[in-house]
Amino acid sequence: MRKLLLCLVLAGCVGGVPGNPVPQEARLSAEVLTLTLSDGTVCRANWVAAPVGRMEACGPGYGYAVRVIDNPNFLRQIWTELTSALGAEGAVAPLAEVVITDPAGVDRVFASPPPVKDVF
Image (cartoon, rainbow, N blue to C red):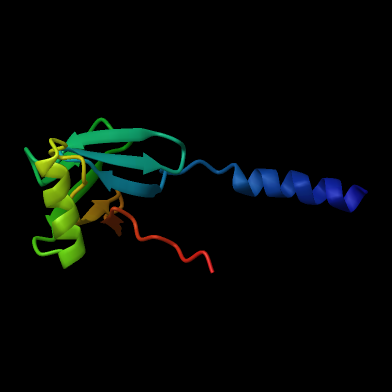
């Protein structure tokens, strides 16, 4: 029992060291980049107005760069055109690569929308 308590106390001390939150997810809508950090913070930027920029008000500040993939696969092109024709312009998020740069200069690359995980 004492060993378990000692392990829990030591794990709490080691795990409690504060640091910069880590980017967990980056998603695009038609105009907004949404960044989710490991501490639960959610930051937003208008990526259409500035495809490369900095989220200064997001924790210690994170840089971002969005590269839209202009020629996605044929089925995605049809789906995007169909939703636009039905009046849902912008309902399909663009296919892009998002690079988030943390305050230490470390880049993390995200795909938006994120890839679908295999269920099998």
